[in-house]
Image (tube, rainbow, N blue to C red; front, side):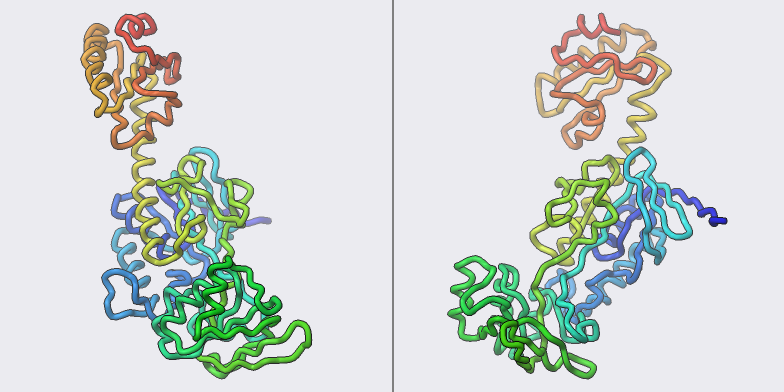
Length: 407
């Protein structure tokens, strides 16, 4: 007999505990929303594996990534956020109540914030797992370039990201050895980047090669390449290796419910909305140009704030705007438009003439158009009439006589 899952209710459930998810948790918790953060493995995400974070504002001593994310976690806890280390098995995003299920629990929430991040594509070569992240194999030149000053670095890949990141590393490293799987002179990057790399005195290329295995004791010492035409093994002694062969967003859980790009990233607007009401996505699982802690926490701040606004507006909309007790008149306008602002006096006159039998709501869209979007208006200003909690009229050609005739 299947065990019945424990049901818990939250205002906000955040899936993913990297910098983006932690930032969203801080903002949601500070807004006094009942917030839960779910993380399947390690709070802090991939950032915790970075030995030095030299470009995150406010930390001049280049601390470890774990030091920064631990502070974020403590800050979120201080805001009353709940944390649970468990994998999410399924989600239901449509509907007013969102459902997030784990092995033992079912969480019902008003808002879901997806912050599942992504993972760098790896080579699959022998012993690779032993040296990932802080043991010799890295995936972020912006993060780790300075730590490789005057060192010999191996770069795997020849796409735009690999060559551009390799050129950035060359500002610090003594030598860059690039493994390219194509014939000499052929790369996957753009022509300008290729010519610049070929001409760079620090860049050396091993053509027709892929990684066979990684070698070392506690830390990477040698990358053994293999010539794909001859089978010859080519050992390259180095201080570090950077893999730039692609990035995979962790979006599998959502691909049947959300629109994704061809590379499986979740698409969002400037408020990190996904297209389903009450569902936001942030961080590296979204299609973004720069994947850094600083941009991730910015995403989290936006989503946490947008989630609070969404919940507040929904409560106003359901309980006040769409009330069922009386006939309703909703005037939607923008305060910076003089004509629509002036019509407020006409709305006031209509309200007075109905002697308490009419509920009038005025919605100014200057700072937020969320309520107007819920009403499905084509343009502003507009008047909306409701009866028994349902919209009966949308009026765009505004006049006192016309509105009064529809009440």
